[in-house]
Length: 78
Image 1 (cartoon, helix red, strand yellow):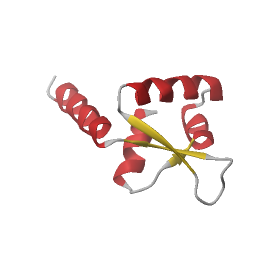
Image 2: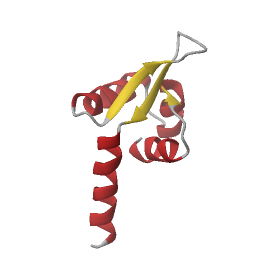
Image 3: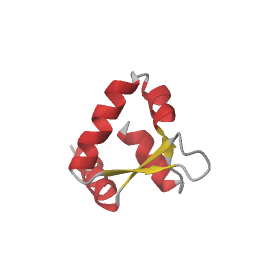
Image 4: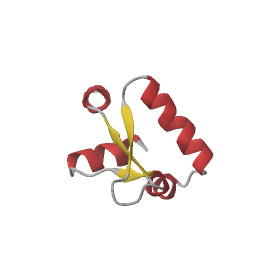
């Protein structure tokens, strides 16, 4: 899920919850729980879709992107 969010951030897009569920092969309840945990830490944000108010878009925050980049650097040097 984090990789998908990072890729979307780098492409300047946001993903819908249904997109994330499909990409991660996770039930919506599981994906929503994980996104809420990321939001609580300040790593992700959820915003209503401008064109379809039934949908919610998810994206990494700047802090989330920085933390994930730091993690990738650490495992890359291992």
